[in-house]
Image (cartoon, one colour):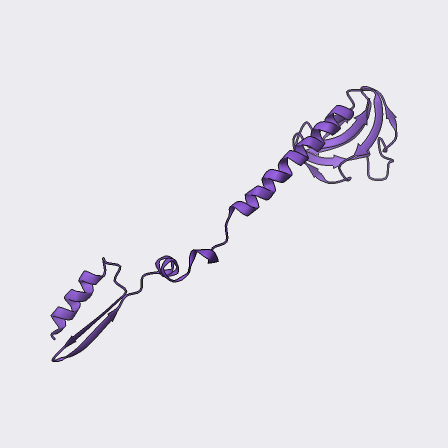
Length: 156
């Protein structure tokens, strides 16, 4: 066997899915092995039962989402929700040593300041738009808040 024949054979095998080739002749023996890559090897050697099905995670999310939506709808029916009108940092009091604007259980009137949200070094007062009782404060002092994030539940 000459070298040109071997190199020509290798070149022709590159575009095929032949993994191993062995040729026996009077003058000798030649064996050529080709690496097919991890995906091709896995699909040829592992039975399909070893693959982990992905929909299991999606099913859990689908079950969880309606429950969360139901809870939010019930809260919105029962309480008035004050949401953040902007992105910033939530503060319960006008200054670090001062008492908070409101506590859970306090009665508030329309236009009363509930908190401050700092955005770009500007202090924005967030006022109540209803008369009622503060049932729940949902954000800790000094925590970042997002636009539309729920801040307070007020029982009207």
